[in-house]
Length: 603
View 1 (tube, rainbow, N blue to C red):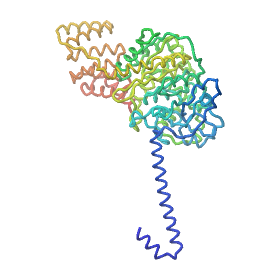
View 2 (cartoon, one colour):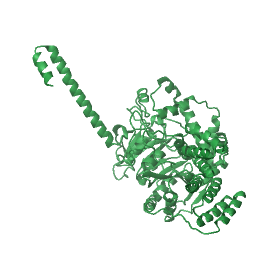
View 3 (cartoon, rainbow, N blue to C red):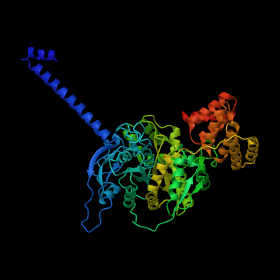
């Protein structure tokens, strides 16, 4: 600096020197100001968890003068996903190239206006996955909103910013859209309530479409009473209707996909309703077998030449139909813009868009037929008082920037396809944590029963949270074990029952043998085989784990565990099992075929 000053003094009479010095000082000031603004922007972003991409205020309509009743959403604030039109603002669809190539909206979305008319104040637009594709919530252009419960993990998408804004208590509620899980996934990952209404129940005028046969307007809240109040406004529901009985139906096979112990999900819900009036004894159903029998069009979407009666394959077929329908309608809606503009897209969204644009869709009618049959099947299962209970999503939130694997996507879509393809209403309800991750379950009921479902959540919520607290403080359920003779006789009886295709009977005999001798690998291995026949894949996996712990070279245990994990859509783990079986038995044809198929899936 002293050299610069000496230079200026020596050339004080030269105007060029003063010009250079002035430019240098100005440059230093500009750099300092830029750094200050960036720092300030980072602080602001941290304060709002990166949830918002644009802040503004839409003032609610005036309150009516007394003695008129107060507006139902008076005093509440809300945020909206960057997919809703707001007059005077360009709707960005999560992508700067979309925003750049579209005019500002000349009208505000019908659903936003309805909330303003009922007293709520809108405070801004939230970040979303580009073009409403993706279920992780990551956005390479605007940044990924920070999951308040798990900052190093994804918030879930595509309505990520809206879920984060609610979870961080920046607003009282927020709007999102749900196509193949875009409200339900972020609600689960962020530990808040998320409601997907019946398809077509809420107006989508002024909302950009992804796939109009699957799109639904959804909303998030932490408080069930706010979720309920917003629902009453958007669904234009009657304030009071006669109380009905309720019948919970647990989809036992779908809980096989979840790694959360049933003690923290099924058991919690069962205990919660015991104390409430108007609830009948819960039913249990094998949901995959039910839809395989009642949605015949699914046969056209069955992959890998599997039989629809084989465990989770019916749900995989439903998921395949859902993804095909989304891609077909997205292509119809946006192919022209994509080819003209060639937008910059994140890698995962780019893959989805390319798959949609490059595919040829032949049997389109069958996609809509599956949807029609699925809605009728749900009505048949649930009738007037039934509520299906399923896990919202199979896996915990992924780590940031890891990207979603085929396995994660398949397991998620299998569960999310139920409501998306039937058009039924679904609510994701938080149930505390497991291993530090938020967990949730979902209640699904038939198309048009939105008030019934919202009333149920309001009715059950306090009792559910009480049971969550009890479950989190209780010890795991003990395993029975013992050591007596006669276990071999019981094993032989189990083998006989197995040969006679009496799977439940075989499980009972093997269980009794295990009680007498809990260190015999064969007993666990045989019971795993019976569990596989029953479609109890999680139990089969656990039994194979036990068998392998006692006998590290048990080829059958690796094969059966691989089959169980494959059926649970855990492709990488299944692949390792079949590889291990091949190391122990290189000529094993079953392991060889499975290993080749799974290697293609994983890659």
